[in-house]
Amino acid sequence: MSTCETATSSTENSEKFSNSNSSSSADVPKDATPSEGSRTESSSRDNKREASWPSVLFYIHLNILGVYGIFVLFSHTSAITFLFTSFLTLCGILGATAGAHRLWAHKTYQASTFLRFSLMLCQTLAGQGSIYDWVRMHRLHHEKFRTPDDPYYSDKDFLHAQVFANIRKLSPRQEKLLEQIDMRDLESDKIVMFQKRFYWLLYPILFVLLPINAPLEYWGDTVQAAIFVAFSLRYLLVLNVAWLINSAHFIWGLDKNHKQSDSNMVFVVTKSYWPQYHYLLPFDYQSGEFGNYGSGCTTAFIRVFAAMGMATKLQTMTTEAVKKGLTMAVDSGRPIVDCLKQAGAEDMCNLQREHYLKNERLH
Ligand SMILES: [Zn+2]
Image (tube, rainbow, N blue to C red; front, side):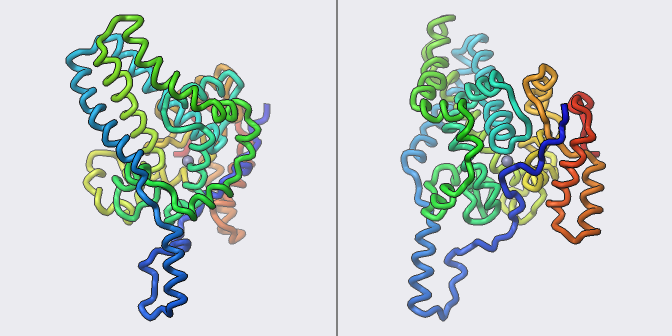
């Protein structure tokens, strides 16, 4: 089977790095006329993001209960509840990374019905809203990356991108932009649309009731362990890891302008180019969400399912394709990203079907 369908079919336009869309009040000239002033006022109203108070209150409670869950974990929790919670947490993280992000948002590979259904269940265990809504926000994030229209934009620090962006409502302008995101591919996916339609039912049963009920019903653990560990602590962990998909570039990215307040973080983690790479060429299945490339749990997960024949058409870039793309850009004067995409798509035809078993990667 050919592996050469399409790096270029990706729907998102990911190379938006300029701040040209910025229209903050800081741009207002001092001698603006009243009409200009009122125009600017309505534009800043359009861009204003109010706090979502239910989300703020929920986040505060979740942090308190989740942190208490750490105490319960070491004092009132059986080993089996610990393993059960770890398993559900891992499923939720894979649902967000291998499912919502790499499969549905960026189409880095194709998945069989069984795998898509399993990933849909796992994504429900991430408690992040439906796949459809998550992907729509993530596509807007890529399209407006590092502009004030990006839902996870922050010109301050990691905390603003990781937490505050997620507990604010969208601005009226962002709501309009969100409606314009092309979602036809997901609308034709029955599993995604099933989850969207019945999310109100799937979420409380799969995400809340079953994880709390299982430790009480099947192995007689304490109520505290069921509520504070299997629910609150798990939710806190999976929520923050999933939020990190949109804000990891603050920690692992190399753009100094976007980690002014968190420069100390780079002493404890490895700086990496890969988050930037993902925003340039998001179709590569090997691109890790958290600063790695070609390794990690999610990439291994996709390879295992590829070996079983349930994940196909894994898209990636080779060193040769990058060299060819850069040469093409220099020769033709065309944008580098377009040339890299074209060279990548051409190179996929030359890759063997089982290229993922050879750990094909950029060096
Ligand atoms: Zn992405």
